[in-house]
Structure formats: structure tokens, C-alpha cells
Image 1 (cartoon, rainbow, N blue to C red):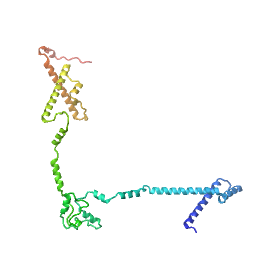
Image 2: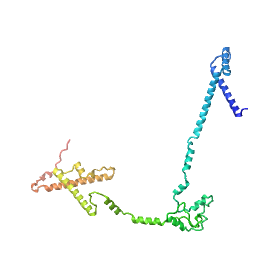
Image 3: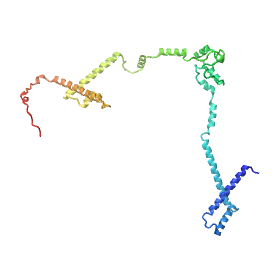
Image 4: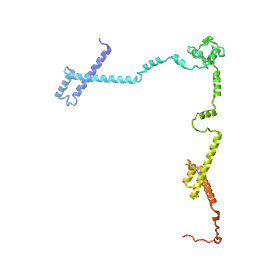
Length: 331
């Protein structure tokens, strides 16, 4: 006797096959007129039915089986696609976890971490052992004093304290504290700061050191050399200004062109970003005042060069201005 699951599957396949056969018969006889009246039509339908259900319909049965297999494959593809969408991205999880466990070494990681000098590591061991610690307690109950262990201080000062350090005075059972109080400063740190403060280079020493590193025929900058350089620059600037005034006098001009004014002082032609503000008007007034000063200076020097003997007195007829005469207006 076959199992119940297999029997149900066989029955389902038989029902599906019968449905497919019935559908095939309907497709073959679709569109025929007078199915119930015409004997020839009924005979044709009977022959097709016998072919489908009988031994002569092997080809039709094969077609039905092929269609059934295609539907089953389609269902399997849908199930595989559903499973792939559910487990997508989890293929390499097992490989990654195995590689991480191989690389992970707790001892090396703990050795790389810097130990905290302000926490007693015995507190951490007590918590990791599974014993519950009162969260309201500030200090652990196993310590009877707040005095710091002298061996601990020596190890810290000699930089021997670490994860694998063991107290010579009983190890973890030592009654003294193996941590520094808050705000405690080590001697090495204070001495290091004092040494650095004494050896710190001043700004003058830094400038002198960098100056000595410079190579070339340059002159060292001192107070005396700077004063000489400043006086030389002022003299050159004054000479340049006098040359410009003399050149304008030779040309016979009593005013400066835009180009000459730009050559004389290019800062007068700097564009102003805020042209609407009052600074722009003040700048224009400064330009005009500079122009007037240059003009008067040129006129004064030109007047000094004129020969006074060539000046003739011009007599003015004052009677012309005594009688007021109204001139006719233009129409």
C-alpha cells in the first residue's frame, strides 16, 4: 500500500490530467455549430473524445504531460526565486565569522590597550567574576583603606605597571589601592614639563637661527642697517618726485594728465567697492587736493624762473567800469 502523501499526489496528477484532456477536447470542438442536433458533428466530437481518452490519443497525452511538466518547472523556478530573495546577502556570513574568529586574539588586544592608572583593575575582575556590585557604592567593600600601595607607585614611576603586573604584597589580596586618585600628577610629567619650559626656544633665538641658515651675499639686518636703508628709500622717493615736477615744467604744462597722475600715485585710482558711501567722496576730495598742491607747486617754480626785468606795468582805464551800461538782451 503506497503512503498517503504519494496517493494524494497521484490523485492530484490524475485530476489535472483529466482537466487538461477536457480542455483539449473543448479547444478541438470550439466553434462547431449544431453540436446537439447534427449527427455528423456529434460523430466528430465522439471521435475526438475517444482519441483523447483512448489508446489512440498517445500524442495528445504526451502534449498534456509536456504542458504539466512546464507548469511544474515554472512553480519550482518561482520557489527558488522566493528563497533567493529571502536569503540574499547572507551567503558569506559563515565565512566571515570563521575568519574573524581565527584573527581575534583577546590577549593581543588587551596588551595593545593602554591601562587606566586611575581605576583599580581588581574592581573589573570582581565584576567579571559574576558577583553583583552595588551601583550606589562608591568604593568596593574589599578595601579597608584609601592608602595607595607603594609598590604600585614605584611600578608606575618606573613605567613597569601594566596588565600583567602583580603586586609583591599579596597580588590581588593586597589591602592597599592600586590606582591613582583624581588630579594626581606624576613626578615624571612635572619634570618633563619643567625641562621643556627651560629648553623652549624663544622667538628671538628662532629668528637668529633661521637667519644664520640663510646663504648668499645678503647684508644682515640690524638696527643701523635698517635706518640706513629707510633713509635711502626716502631720498629715492623725494628725488623721483622732483624729477617728475621738473619734467612737467619742461613740457610747459601747469596740470597733470591722467597718465602722469597715475604714474605719480597709482593708489589714487584704486576702485572703490562701496561707491555710494561717504568714503568715495572723501577720496575724490583727496585726489583734487593733491592735484591742486602739485599745480601750485609747478606755478610757484615757474614764477621764480621768470625774469622780473621783463615785467611791464599795464595801465588800466578805470573809467570804463564807472558807468553801468545795460546791454540789450538777445531775442
